Image 1 (cartoon, helix red, strand yellow):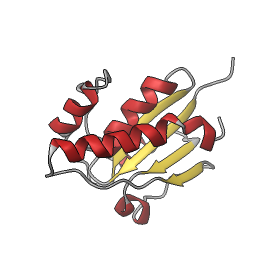
Image 2 (cartoon, helix red, strand yellow; image 1 turned 90 degrees about the vertical axis):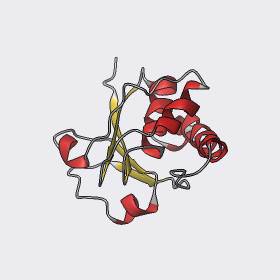
Image 3 (cartoon, rainbow, N blue to C red; image 1 turned 90 degrees about the horizontal axis):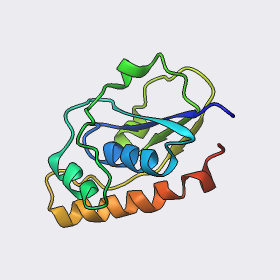
Image 4 (tube, rainbow, N blue to C red; image 1 turned 120 degrees about the vertical axis):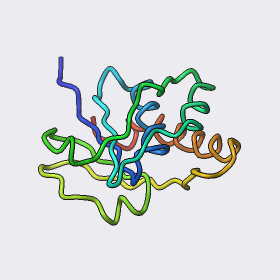
Length: 135
């Protein structure tokens, strides 16, 4: 059996988009990837992100916001940025890995309807993860 691939999902605050994407990847691909999410300026997991993911039966309530600097000892196979700020200010991550930028609108401070729209876009993109990323 091959070893799981390490995937990092990077955003600025590690509060919404990266947390939702982490939940989706764990849900659909947890048997083949180990998923990490982190932020360039971590804050906290947004309660609306938790709520809209729960609507799909994906529990991210145990997640917490992490700094990318806290996980630099991990060797990543795939790094995906989900916001332009993180893409432009991505810290140096050592090693060879596939890098992708899959940008999504920031739902922070907006309605649950907006959170659901962003969640659904993340689900669509990350559910097709294996079609775009070499595993």
